[in-house]
Image (cartoon, rainbow, N blue to C red; front, side):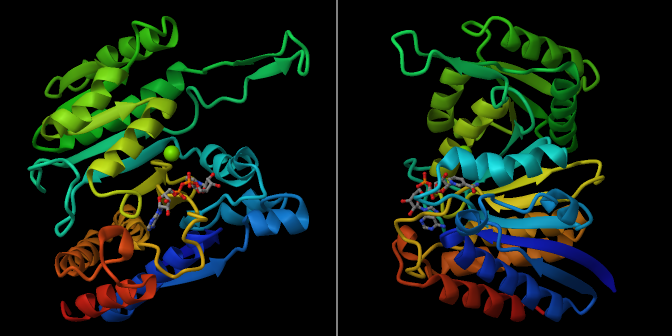
Length: 356
Ligand code: NAI
Ligand code: MG
């Protein structure tokens, strides 16, 4: 029996609904396969938890999580708790302490989903964005001075280290090198940001020397964003710093069908710490409690988790079943259908059963 342990952190709003379906799909798959067992532990860490305890997770939260094989997270953030509190109180500490320095975000059009880009199909939209997840523009270095006066000011510094830059680039080059296209696009802005971005570009060229078969293009982030819309078919692997990757991947999510679909994986490639799998979307207070959130992103995350465990056969069955259901048009309201979150999850389970 292959055994895995997963820490479940559904979080806030629709996070709870979509993780419930993701877990159901995982459970069904384990039952069907018979050779894999997953043990879950549920944590109620969230904004609700914050309102009761004054923190997003207990002080020893990271210590509690560190021995799990992975973390499966819904979304955190809710009106009443400032977003920087929920983010810096839970998500960012997990990403950083567990050295989840790789954020994988596939930009892949699933079967059955219509891209908002005219005349683009599954063959045109199929690439991966690797976002640096531990440093860059999202650093806590800086400060605020003279608040409340005419001289009010704020400074936030970007942090680009050789260590952090090389390891994310190596991961991206490795990924590109394993594929058939062997094409890497690196996001930059070395014309406007004249210290960190030329540094980034320099390491792109340096690491590229270890991957002579990979063709590389270094593109300014503003132009690159427009190319996501005008020529998405050219991309294979795209690597970006933390902020650029964050923004690019929301655009990536939009061109493959929207927030209800986009998954992400925060990976510690060395597997020294657990990796974390979470939909790109947030807690969606506007539809929370209505039972209509699209669980596609959460289910896709579960399949990425299986890939990370080395269970690629099972992951493929899950993705195949998911796409069959989407193709049949049994979809949630964000995709123009009438299915509830729960009905959609059920349909995916039903499809998987038909494949065993
Ligand atoms: P959001 O992703 O929660 O919602 C944006 C829009 O997309 C809303 O109209 C929502 O209804 C829709 N949407 C999102 N996921 C959907 C799904 N699965 N099915 C159907 N429709 C879906 O982003 P927003 O409104 O900016 O943030 C809401 C809260 O979530 C904030 O507190 C924010 O800080 C937090 N957040 C948390 C994230 C995380 O935990 N990783 C990521 C993004 C936001
Ligand atoms: Mg984002």
